[in-house]
Length: 110
Length: 117
Image 1: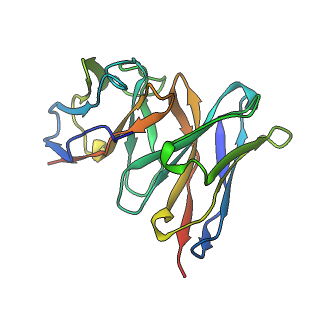
Image 2: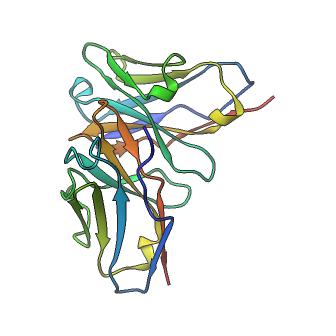
């Protein structure tokens, strides 16, 4: 199972919105609505942001939103803040009854 | 609150085995699957497998089948991940993560495993 494709880096200024893409195939992202997103600050464990494409767990800021079109899922961060500077990973359930992660995207707040 | 507390760092020689534990608290142990994920230094997340704590059903990533075993002890609410035939490429931080709605909602603090002669 190949890793999902994410851009290596995305940057934005405080207050702006950015979008991170996550491209897979019909065997994973395109075939199921079980796409999730995680934020990982340097040296820390990942934190849960989004599940089932667009659902936010309680406690997660509404500045984070998810969507999907075909084989590509997206995470949008609006009102970018300094603390949003981190690595972001997507994950999807797959046809093989396994899970796969994206390669990760480093978000820089300019 | 829901917590996953993992065992401490390990240093192993090539060819050895390592077992990482993950003690769960704050929720019904048998109500959730448990994922295992690893992260090599400077690299991304890699999914290793998942265990259903009732019935011991496991699903492993194809890359690790044959040298990984996941298990649990319901009496102590602890999950275990054993990886055999270690090489330098297995040097990584290993995480357990509780499954909720086909996602990982709570993560352990991570266990550093270093493989070196």
